[in-house]
Image (cartoon, helix red, strand yellow):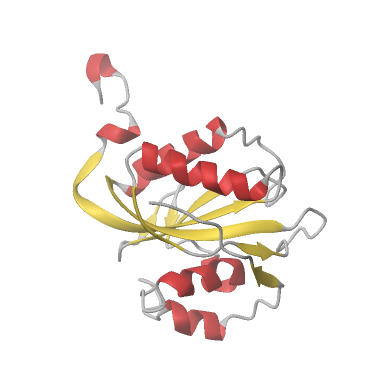
Length: 183
């Protein structure tokens, strides 16, 4: 708890150690590439150290296909926040970017998912890490493999490269021409 019995803000809930996170970004409403750029800026402004970023990919919606295609990207970042505090932060940033509640897996201006948190496994009603559906999604595995092909999935023990080879996802995915991005 913070001062006067109020819950601590996400910035104050620290592990004392730095955790290496992989985050998935996605947008299929508005100016999609600009939405990803704004999300990166806000993450950095809120204390995440961005280490690497994948290219941006245009991807076919999975599940509910009756919506616009997405632009997706994966970031590698470091933070002293514990995973639950990082989730609180990313949900706050999504609201700041005017993400509105809608149907599950429906259209959205921004989506920020915690894919991996080092080798940690988190399973709470609010948060599951590694992300429970990441191994079946090319729009996650392709950009993640681009920046961290040897990263290990802490549950399966398989590398991201191997998970990508083994996925059954046949959805379309197209790498976009890179735009300049600065750390």
